[in-house]
Image (cartoon, rainbow, N blue to C red; front, side, top):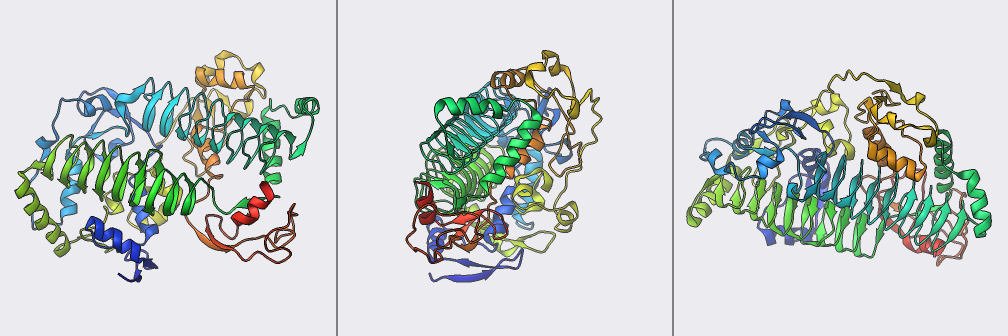
Length: 595
C-alpha cells in the first residue's frame, strides 16, 4: 500500500502510516491504527505502574503483602506465592460473551473479578528480593524495578546483570556503581552518565574505556584526567585528595561544576552503539528498528520502548520486556518466547496467538482472558474446542467493529486498538505515562483519566535531612533506626515519600565507598536521575557544528570536519529538544571530536 496520512481520533493531530507499516499490519492480520504513535504509547504506559507500591492484604491467604494495586482499584489481588501457585484456576471466573454489549467493557468487568498478581515479574527467580517489581533473577535486592539478573542492588530502575550498585538507572553489567545513568560494564563509577567500560571514574559523561578520570567528558581510552586535562599518576593522585568526595556539600558543588563543564562539549544526537539502520534513542545491538527508545537486540521493529536484551523481532508498538519475542503489537509487559501477542498486558512465558490477554502465562489461542495459565482456546476465561473458539472469535471481532467501545472522550475502540486509558486500574500519576507525558491533576481529570490521591503521611520524623552528618565516617550504625525527613518535604512533583530510612546494607555501601548519606527519599532521587535521560520523543534538527566551532561559539573543534569551514548540513531526528542547552552534533562531527 502507499503512504497514508491520518488524523488521530484522540489528539486530532496528523500522523503518517508508511507502506512498510501496512505490510506489518497485513502480516499479523490487524487493521491500521486510528491513534497516533504518541497517543498509542501514552495509552500503554498508563497501564504500567513501576514504582508506586502499597501495603495491603492478599485476597486469598489474607497475609500482608506489597502490591502495585492499591485497595482503591477494587481488583482481586493475590500475593505472588498465591497467584503463581496451583490453588486456583482462572477458568472458574469465565463468563459468556454478551453480543449486546461492547466487548472491551466485558473484558474490563472480567479484570475486576479474576485474580491478578500483586507484583509483576518472575516470582520464582527471586531470592531475598521481596520489595521489587517487574524483575527476574534477583538476589539480595531492595526497591529495584524493571531489572534482571542482579545481586546486592538497591534503589535502581532498569538495572541488568549488575552487582553491588545503588541509585542507578539504565545500567548493564556494572559493579560498585552509584548514581549512574546509562552506563555499561563500569566498575567503581559514580555520578556519571553514558559511560562504558570505565573504572574508577566519577562525575563524567560520554567516556569509553577510561580509568581514573574525574569530571571528564567525551574521552576515549584515557586515564589520569581531571576535567579533561591529563596528569601523571602521581599528580592525579595528589590532586584527587583535593577532590575527594567525602561530604554532602562538596558533592553538590562538584555535581554542579561537572554538569556545567559537560555543557561545553558536543553531544551525539543519539545514544546508541553497535546498530544498523535505526532511529529513536538509547538503542543497542539492533538493526532495522525505528522510532524506538531504550531497547537492545531488536530487529525489524518500530514504535517500541523499554525492550530488554535477549532477541526481539518483528514488533510494533511494543512496550516493556521482550527477551525472545516476535510479532508483538500494541502490547506491554510481554516476553519470554512469546509470538503474536496483540493488544495485551502481561502475556509471558511461551504465550502465542494471544489477543486482549491480561495476565496470561504460557497460553495460546486466547481472546479477552484474564489470569489464565497454560490454557488454550479460551474466550473471557471460558474454554472451547478449537472450531467453536475460532467461530466465536470471528463473531466477537465483527461485534467489536459494529458496536465499538466508546470512552468518555468519544473515542471509538474497534478491534485492533489497545484498551482505553480510562480502563487502567491505576491513577495516571502512578504510571510511566506521567513520566513520559506529564499532566497536572486538572489536565488528567479533564481527559477523564483516574488520578491517585496522595496518601496522608504522618511519619514520626526523628532526624531532618539538614541534621545528617556531612561525612560518612562520623555516621554511627544507629542511623538505621532514624526516620529521616526528605529535603523536598513533599513540596516537589516527584512522588516524594516525605521521609525515608537507611537500611543496614545501604549504610555498609556508603561506608565502603566513602560516600555521604543521601538527603532525598528514593523517589526524589529517582526523579533527579530521570532528568539525565532524554524523553521518548523526536525532533527534526540540523547539526550544530558551524565549521571550526559550535553554533553557540562555546566549543572549539579539535579537528577539521568533512564540511571544513562551512556549517554542517546533516539533519537528523533527535530526542534533544531544540530549546535544550546541549550542543548537538551529527555522528560524523561528534566522532571527529572524540576519536
